[in-house]
Amino acid sequence: MAIKAKIKGKKKKKNKPTSKKYTKYKIEGGKLIREKSCPRCGPGIFLSLGSGRQYCGKCHFTDFSKS
Image (cartoon, rainbow, N blue to C red; front, side, top):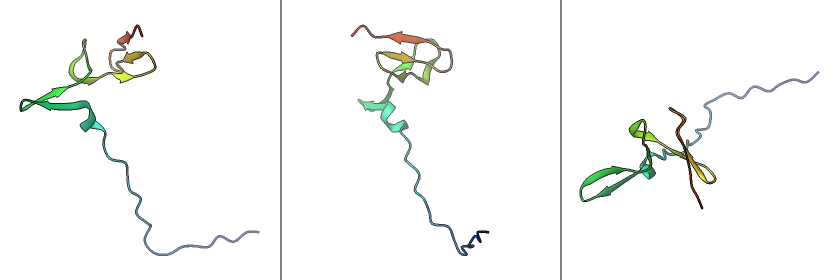
């Protein structure tokens, strides 16, 4: 029969990864420009990048690249 040892005190803090939203925007000429937004849903809904395609998770729009 194994006896579990109880650890008392505070838990060690784990750092969470930072948000990647800043990589989807560019500032050009003092204006905020969104990159790769969905043509059906409009600005603010981004396309995910896959191998040879771009996909919208909201409306299921898929854009295949020819390369």
